[in-house]
Amino acid sequence: MLNSGRAGALVLALCFAVLHANARAADIPVGPSPILNAQLTSGSVTIRVWNRPQVRITTDGRIDWRYLTTAQIPHIPSEIDFWSQTATTPLGSVTLPLEAFLLPALPGNHDAVTLRGYGATTITMPAQTALIVTRIAGRGDITISDYRGTLVATTNAGAIEVQRVAGTAYLQVLRGRIFVADSTFDRVRARSGVGPVVFSSCSAGQIVETSALGAVIYDDGTLGQGPAHFGSEFGNVAVGISGAPAAMHHSPGGNTTVTFGPGSAVTASSAHGSVLTYSGALGAHRDLLGRWPRGAVLLRTHGPAPMMRPPIRRRRRF
Image (tube, rainbow, N blue to C red):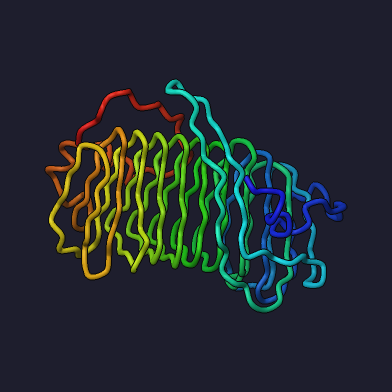
């Protein structure tokens, strides 16, 4: 959830008078480097890109939208805050604490499209879109593909699925999972309260990937100079680096630091689960899959997030 302070400018004048109401379909002409701000109470958001200078919105619910010129956009801050969120589980309360995220500079002029409402909504953006901010306050899934730029996506309960995305990203789900595949990031932060966080065949210069109750996986990926941290309170943590010469490391709990190559230090931790680091893809290690078949299931999971069952209070083994 976005803080109303520094993020107030980022959400781009949400307290606007509605100019276009109850849009089931709309094509909106925009400039060469627009900004999208989509705020839904519930439903789903699917974001795609195309090589046209328009934003296309289609929905089976109700969407109110407004086009903002460059002169109407408030100053975009360099940092945004995310409010603390808490979920109640059979294991007690799970809290995602207040966290700040530094945005990259967005040079040049930008117009914008802001929208809010509910329902299953598809938004098609120009390929040169500079910034996408999308949030679902209640239950709903967010799917984003083939985008290059700065991405902020949060949902209270559901799933975030990202494929073939490049740039800088902040991804957060309180109840549900995050799945990222075939993407390249300068910097990425991904966190879930109740659910797994999975990266498959990705590259990250800097990454922090955490979950309170779910598993954390970074499989068959590459890393830059870091920092790179992967952590879970109750879930297992698995980190596989493509082409890494490092030996396999398995810890039944606690913290571990592994160097996969020159200058590539990775920290991984799980207070009540296991920590595993390996070379390449988990699927290539049959002995590990035999001890942790759930890992293979998480790596091929797509679509709407299932209801998460909390882990039991005992140390789990691979």
